[in-house]
Image (cartoon, rainbow over all chains, first blue to last red; front, top):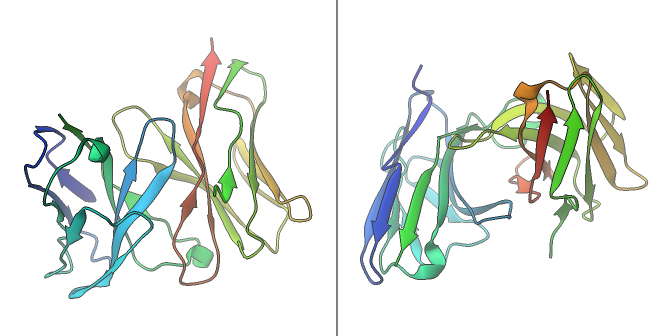
Length: 116
Length: 112
């Protein structure tokens, strides 16, 4: 099972460049998320989506954009890369939020982005 | 403001001994707590969770304890194995539709 797949795994960007991190999931999950993890820090939510055509901001949305045209795909766009966006990015998906049912979020393997 | 705190950045334990990973929280609205395990170059994976209506949940070698009055939870791993060496994130949820709030993580090293 593929689960959550994100690409690229590694990327070096120059300041001011733009790029898109791709994320796709094959579990038919409604909810998808983008997190970033800075060194020595926990995961911070950038954007999330509760279903196709619906997106919303998380804790740290500035400098990013997302779209959700299909249930499977949730790309993250960096328009003008800045050194502060150097981080590890994780895409994730879940059947629902509110994990009282014991459901879990599934994470991709991460994308290492360096802005120089 | 860090709502989920993992104040110890690292822990080193001998194989076969108990590992105790601590987590504190400040938001009294949190009602569901989870632990995630993360190996290098991989995404976090779910380990164990606990609802605020319980004070203990056990799954094999892993037990999570919740002390609501102290706003504290801990993950016990007994016995610890070298394969348990990883970063462990504590996370919390406030309500049915809220999102996960993560702590900074603790790096556990289990020495053979």
